[in-house]
Amino acid sequence: MAVITVTNDNFEQEVLAAKLPVILDFWADWCGPCKMQAPVFDALAEELEGKVIFGKVNVDEEAALALKYQVMNIPTLIVMQYGIFQTKAIGVQTREAILEMLKSCGEEE
Image (cartoon, rainbow, N blue to C red; front, side, top):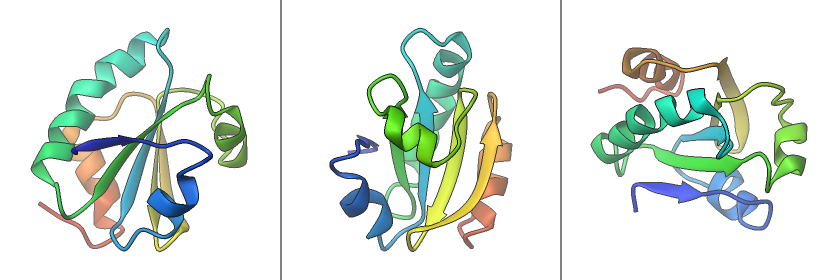
């Protein structure tokens, strides 16, 4: 279970109540840059399993979540810890940039 699908129904349990930092990838099937982001996101999910929760939010299916976190462009990555917003990055992010985002939660390689 490297990457989980986050929906409005499981958001509270999977993100807000999580004991680990959570990084969310807001994406859509039709988004080319999102497809470029996916392999980097998935590889880090495998590498950091047990340290960070990696979740994907399909903006077409979960528009309310995208609106709540003011996601206007995709891909957008959002880091949450203890249910609190930590940081956000818009556009395709490198492995190094994602690791830097996670440092705000004290999670490093």
